[in-house]
Image 1 (cartoon, rainbow, N blue to C red):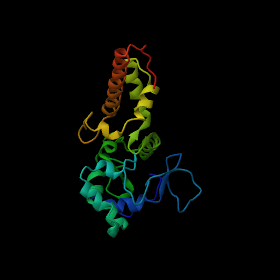
Image 2: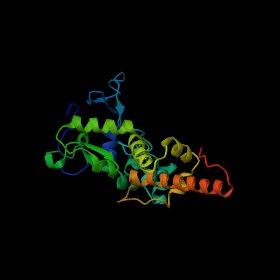
Image 3: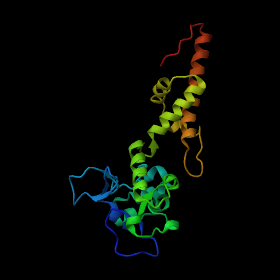
Image 4: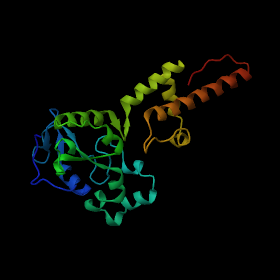
Length: 233
């Protein structure tokens, strides 16, 4: 790995705070090397820790408050009376929803040193490449970071939406216009999570299903009034 090494081979995993503390000033360069931006402030790259005071998956950037269903846990995370970095990153919600992900897998000789561990949500952790080459890991990480917004892979969402639109012979632009008029809370009873997280095909499928129902209601309304059916948003 082309980065500074920790001083020893740990036998047990470090705390989430220790991992955060090591990576908080690191960036991944366009060549997939690790650089400390305090030492080299003019180097371009992707900052690994998005927000030091608001924990999120380092890969997809999904915030803890979207991963945690128990609101009392997130309230303790954002308790203003106890907001030092150690308490934040060692909070129960953070430890429950951000996995310690090996860069070089343990089964391939990877260790528990802080320079070999990232903090990721379970979904991103499950999808990480398990190889001995750190640059492959960092390249994959950078690709997902660019594609994701608050835990949502925008590129994949667009691809899945287009697939649904092709199946139902509808226009993705019309669906997107409809989505802009819908409260996201209306989706809560339209799809279910799968092993702790929502699949893209489920979330997009729920939106498309709602749009089709809306479109059908408009058609029925116009037919009842004897109007010519022309559907435009």
